[in-house]
Length: 275
Image (tube, rainbow, N blue to C red; front, side, top):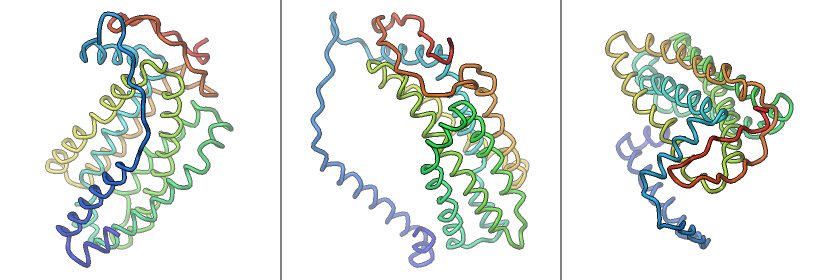
């Protein structure tokens, strides 16, 4: 739709349509009527936000499964955005693709994610959480090499294959790893754990985009794409070097609720994979 709209009404108006779609999305959210209970205030009053954030950070950093996951995802997001920051410029200026062609490539590549969602649980049961994570990390890291390797006279198969493989692997990785962290974290710390994980793994995205732009100005678009692809392979190292993650077969049972109060986090009890 994006490629067609750009060709039909030009890019600025296509962006306006996209903005209106977000307003429509927000309107649909008003239809949610779920009433949630407010969390109980602990004895001594509600802890300060800084204290709660520090507790969540300690939990993630000390955890034998969450720490390598944060390092892996953060590294991958950094280098994938080194690539994506210059991809559209490279596709238009170097490969001379039209907006419609770029849109079609994204569309066809997206089918990999749909297929990944269908087979994710089956693959995890067959190969285990650790091996599935390592394999998908290598897949979406190496798939980025197809972009700078695409021939200028007919790059379409290379680009579609790159996005197909990437979306397939990324969806499986996200389903596996997000399910893992949601399952093992005690209910009391779920919000803090997720906020810290999001900050760590999404905080690298703007840094990767900035790095991609700087590198493209210094060494060129195609060379920057190679840097992003090579760096993406490094994201597998935290999982490979973590015995707890590498050997994990199944998602562990939820950990017991933490007994320590905010700011006084007890040592994290390792899950079954660390026994």
